[in-house]
Image (cartoon, rainbow over all chains, first blue to last red; front, side, top):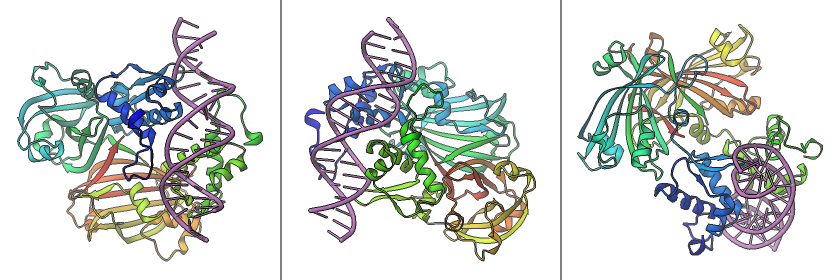
Length: 248
Length: 248
DNA sequence: GAGTGGTCTAGACCACGGT
DNA sequence: CCGTGGTCTAGACCACTCC
């Protein structure tokens, strides 16, 4: 790490060398030096570049692999993770069919509406944007096995996604779009789950009666630096599906 | 690992040395050689006992620490994790107050009923026990901030918890009881979450009307070896609470 | 000061993938 | 065959805790 190396541990702000290496490497992801899908230099090469040992680089790469930022292939190299369907599904989609572990297909989406509006109070708070700033709001219905099971509202700040208006389609896997068109990587997300009753607004879309119990999932998705990028509200029918969590 | 060491990687059943070390150490937890709260030998000592290097022992200990089986304290040593309130709360209790990260207090329990019954079909399946085997079923209500918010049913096989009948009290933190009285460590759990409507049975306990939307959490808790030990159904009021999940 | 875990280094050998 | 990541070892120094 050359001149940036901290020599002593007595500082309260001490960070281990491998953590500093990790920060450096994440910066290369953030600034686009390393594009999704490309392979990054070998451990030995990075060790030379950063003036640390190969073992220290490995510890940083291992941590990033654990966070799904990188993918390692023995004999081939280390690659920047891509927002492929299978990975996004596994990492961010916790709704599963009740019967046997399904084929894990990406839920089909049907776009209902999308328009630019002023952010609500909740959106302002969740996305850390200015009061009343413009946002895009996307309404769609998602289907599993041919049956509508999720009504979802996606909110993103207009400022973060310039020229969003010019899209002529919203793809199924929207995180891949964020990545390919704006270079924004969704790295993690926080979800809050509640039980609610179906309101008239969702009744038609989900094909269920008003008053049907629904799972409300409120997600804040964050980029590589932890900044909130997307707010999503999903109202889910859970008569034949469940939200699966493993502890820890 | 002496004679147990595998010499070559070409076997399909190959396990890295650190994983074999981890298995050995977990066995010491399972058979009670190392009791919760006690400190285990130092890395150097374990390395000598197992005929591996200290770095290999460290990798095994790091993995076990990540699974909350051990706790490390720099300068003091490595300790077997205890089922303390704060850890159990953090690891297994995902229901949180909507407002600001609460004081994280353990929810108070009020015992409604407990009796020995024959296992239902679901219990038989979830707990991998014989059809109609005897189980203990515990019904209780849990409160947060003085208000009842969870009605829960805990089912455990009678065979796994001998003399359960002789208890004169069911403590708040029941996982600590499993550990202290039967030497059973709850190491992980799988949860399934659905939205349901409050039924008459829970209406009185929760002080809400029939038809109120509730979060149904079905948990299968497992011991160190992954065997299912407890089935738990929690019906939760989520008007002022939510179920929190971080992805990944 | 002695002992512990935490970090960092350097080098070795292996299995894997592609040439 | 070579280069890659995966594993294992050995030794050094540090910070922390307790005596």
